[in-house]
Length: 373
Image (cartoon, rainbow, N blue to C red; front, side):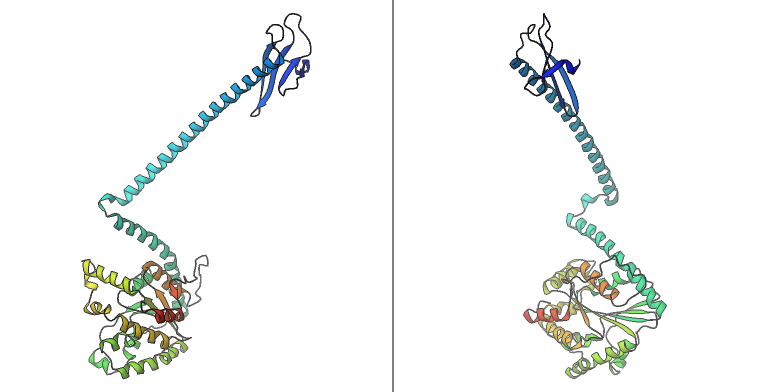
């Protein structure tokens, strides 16, 4: 069919033949394009089919609608097929993932959902800490290489999370080059010595790190409250400790002071858990029983200690510890930021979380408003 034998009508897509057949008359055809495909159809003749321009137009419209409808069905079928394939792929993926989780978790339905959720969150927390634990190993190697000495003090109320933080910090370290020191009650001989002497005996040598789980700051809070020292001994300590620490720093000691600040409500929750959990009952002591009753007394001593014993050479770093994971992470950051060690991974975030890593000034301001910490 040669288009040159036809001429356009005043309707788009409708054509009529130039020549007139003696029997059939003129021929109408429809010619249009849809979705990049061309369609041509003979609609009929003016004499043979008694076809007028109006009826030819209606036939053309009907033809176009049939093409569009047919294409729509084909497209729908294709989309449905693709969708079904995608759904099947997604379903297969979910079944595979579900099976992998079941293989890992085992008979998880026997576990309490809260216990399961806690365990899974703990895994993510431990994975996040690992990147910083790698940095702690680098720092430890640097201390050994440069023959430097580091002391880290962990202070805070009972159940504030000091022990757990120490365990996470030292977990992957070389145990030949660090020590954790947790001193008990002084002996009679030690009571008659210079107060700092029994702590100095445990100080690090070159290339070593010592972590004190409670330190000489027992004399600032615990001892005066429970009557283990006189008011005069307490005051002498408060006057001497800043100079003592400045001397240490001046002689090359890297001294980091961390105070884990737990709220009264969270401390009570942790005590209740210790009492009710057979695995934790050993942690609960007679002193713990008095911690809540003596909260205000401890707050007063804490306020005085932070105000009088923070200094430029040995500042306090306050770590809000209601969230144990965040507290441990921020404690690691404080330690890692204390020295410019080799091979630091600068892609990690070493900036303090200001909701957890609190300045001494901010902590004191908060304590003036409320004794909750």
